[in-house]
Image (cartoon, rainbow, N blue to C red; front, top):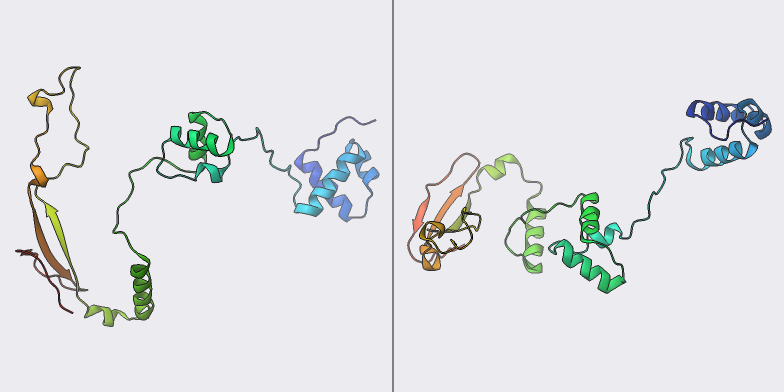
Length: 211
């Protein structure tokens, strides 16, 4: 008489061992008090995957895919929801969009900034890297890296906040005073090598480099 239809991991291991010793499906099922179909499915799973554990269950079907959730980096969750509905006729909530982004390890962060590189820039840098990839420390030690930078004398990064009540927006103590055009700027130049660095030079006018 069959008393159960589910095997523990220990019994599954015993069943596979009996298979390898030459016992048949019905004999193993009789020993473990399960139906032969349970043993047959266990053998098929082991032959296909080499494992006796249950396959992971998919759970509730998701309305969005990871590819759809990653399609637009800079859009808000509400905008992604509208674009998804217009493109695929898939109607989900804004919170579902956020959940899918979080599940794909995506979190809202301030974007990093770097100079925009054209294809010409990228090719030139790749060629330069390949030409110098085998340089030794001694070769790099005689190289001087230089750069120039422009700094604004006054800068507002937009992160300043004030505590105020409704109607106090234009009070003097709630206003941050700024100077037109950033208050001007200065240009500086400097260089570094493996063991030294140059002084920081203040550039008057425009900087022109000759190579």
